[in-house]
Length: 332
Length: 303
Image 1 (tube, rainbow over the protein chains, first blue to last red):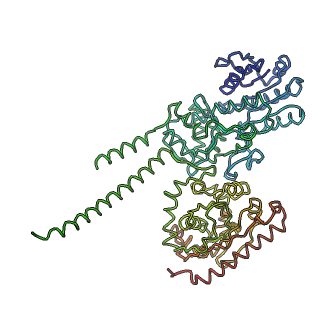
Image 2: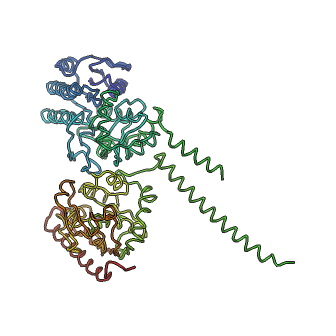
C-alpha cells in the first residue's frame, strides 16, 4: 500500500506509474491538490490538500505502509507563500499522519541538493555529511531544509520507520518542464558575467528508478542523487546552441525580477541565480554503494538527451563557424 | 649540354621546403580551427573541480609562458624530487603581493617536469568571489583551500600545491622579503598525514621583487574587502602601468620529499606531531630560500 504525494506533477506521475506496474504492490494511492494530467493506470487518485488533516484520514483508512513524498514545489509561480505552505505545512501534516499510523513502515522524501546552498566559499564537492557553508536563506531551498528537519524529527520519534531522504540534483530529460529547462529554451541565455558554474543534472529516468528502489526496498538514510560528471554552464549553453549574454549579477537579478513579473518567466528565483553563479557539485558515492547502482545517464548525457528531445542544439554560432570555415577552405 | 642539372635539385629542394612549410602552416591552422570548433560546440570535458585540461593547455598556459620564459626567466631546480605519478603535496613560500608565484609554479611543473604534471593549487576563498578570476582558477585546475577539497584531490592521485602562509605571506611588506611567516595551523600537514602522501618543500626566489610592497592603505582595503591595498613604487602612482610586474630573476627549487607514510594516519589529530612536522617543513624551506638567494645574487639585470 503506497501513497504518492504530488502525483499530478511530472515526477509524481512517473513514480506512481512505475509503482502501479509492480505486481507486488497491492494498491497505489496518489494525492495532489489538482487533477492529474497524465493517465495513472491503476493508481487511485484522491484530490486532497495535504495541508489539511484530511491526509491523515487517507493514511489511516487505506492502511498505507509506504509514503513517497514528492510534493516539494520547486517552481515558484509568483505565489511564493502558497508554495511555501504546500512544502512546509503539507509536509508537517503528512509526517504527523505518518507518526500516528501504526501500519506505517517507510517514508521516502524527495529533497533537493539545493539544501547545500551555493556560494563561492563552498568546497568543490558536497557529501551528505557536509554542512552548507552559507545555508539557503529563501525559496524552495529553504523549504527543503525545513522539510528535512521535520523528517529527521519523525525518524527520531519513530525509530521503527525506514526513512530515506533524497537530495536530487536538477532534473533534466525529455519530459522535464522546470525553471531550468525553460531557461535553456530562452532565445538568449543570460549568464552572470565572470562566473561559469559547475552544474550537475539527473535524468528523469534515473530519478524515477532511484525513487522506485527506495520505495520497494529498505535503504534508510540521506542520499545525494546526480548523474556522474560535471557540466559547465557555458558548455551546456554551447551544446544547446544558445547564444550567451553575459551580464553583471545585479543586472541579471533585475532582469529576472522583470521577467518574473511581466514575462511569465516563472521561477527565475534568487536561488536559481545563485546556482547559475556559483554552481554546486554533490558526491553520489554513498548512493552508488547503497544501491550497487550507477545512473544510466551522466550529467552530460542527461543534458544531451534533454537537448535532443526538446529540439535544442546546433545553434547559430556553430553553423556560422562551419559555413565560414568551409567557404575559406573552399577558396584554397 | 648546359649545367642546369645542378640547379634543378636545388630548386626542388626549396620547393619541397616551401610545400612543407605550407603543409605545416595548414596543419597548424586546421588544428586551431578544430580547437575553436570544439570550444564553440562545448565538446570538451571537465572534472568535478571544473578543471578543463584542453583550455588550460590550449589557451591559459600559452598565455602565461612568455611571462615565465622571457619576463622572469624562471629556472627550476630539483625537479626529480617531484614524483612522475601519484599524489604529493607541494608546499611553497608565498610572496609577490599578487599570487603570481603559484601560476609560475604551475607553468614550470607542466612544461619542465618529464611527466608534464598539472599542479592543483589550493587558493584563498577570495579568489572564488572575484568574477572572471573565479572560473579561470577552476578551469586551470585549482580549487578552494579547504580540507575536503585537498583530501579529494590527493585521493585522485593529483599533485596538489599549497602556500600555508596565505595572505600573511603574499601580502607582507618588502622589508620582510624571504622571511617565512607563520605556517597557518599546520592544516596542510594533517591533510598529508591523513592521505599518507609525501610533502615536497618548495622555495621560490624572485617573486618578492615583482611588486615591492612599500605601504598598505588599510582603510581602502577594508572598503574594497581586500586583505590589503598595496603601494608599490609604480602602483597606484602610474595607474594601470603599475600593474606590470618588475622583471626580477626567478629561481625555484624543490627539496627532498618528506615522507608521511612512516606515521600513523591517526596522528593527524595529534597536535604535537603536526606542529613538529610543520616546523620541519618550514625550516627546510627557509634554508632552501637562503641557499637559492645566495645562488641568484641580485634580483635585476641578470639573464
